[in-house]
Length: 278
Image (cartoon, rainbow, N blue to C red; front, side, top):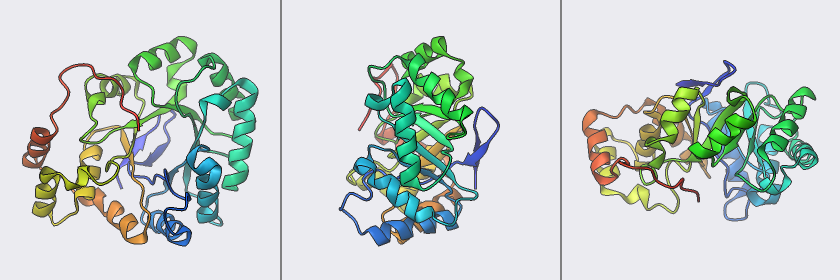
C-alpha cells in the first residue's frame, strides 16, 4: 500500500475509506458495516467521517464497524463550523468520541470555514491535543487564501491535512492549492474521488482506460487521484464488493497514454478556479 507522510512524520495509507451518505437509510446498514470491515482487512485503515454525516449516524456506524479492532486504524472526523468555538469544539469532539466508541480521534478537521475566528478553533484543537482526545488537527474545504490566513493565526505545520473535492471533473486545485500544499508538506485528502451520481464513471475516457487495464472506471478514477504525491483518496463503498474493488485500485498504474486521454476529456486548469464543494 502506498503511504503518505503527515507533517508530524506519521505515515497513513494513501487510500482510505469515506463514509459520506452512509447510515442515512439509503443502503443496508449491515452491508455498509461489512464494507468498512472488508476495506480494513485489505489495508484501507484510514476511515473518514463527520458529525454532520447523518447527524452523527455515520460516526455511530463507524464505531460499530471498528469495535474490537481499533489498533492500527486512523480515524478522521470533522467538527461543524457552527460548533467550532472554543467550548463548542470540545463538546462536539466529546460527542464524536462517544459515537465512535473510541478515546482518541487521530485527525480532527474543521469541516469548512464559518463565523468563528480561526484562532479560536485552533486553540480548541490544541486543548484537545493536550487532553489526549485528539492526536492532531486539520481543515477541510480550505483554499489557498484560507490556508494563508490560517498561517497568520498559527504555525501552518500544525495543520496535518486539508480535505477537498478532487477528481477528474473537479481538478482546479492542481493550479494553485495542490502546489501550495506540496510546498507546505501538507497532504491533500481527496473526497469524492470517484464523483457523485455516477456521471464521472460513465465518461468514455475512463471507460476506455478501464477497458485497457481490465479495471473499472472507479478504479481508474482512484488511480488517477493517487498518481499525485501527497494525496490521500477516500472513496466510499456501500458493499463488500465495492470495497474490494477500491482496495484493488492501488495496484493500477496509469500510463502516459491513459493520463493524456483523461486530460483530453477533463483538461487541467489553466487559471485560478473557485474551490469546488459538494
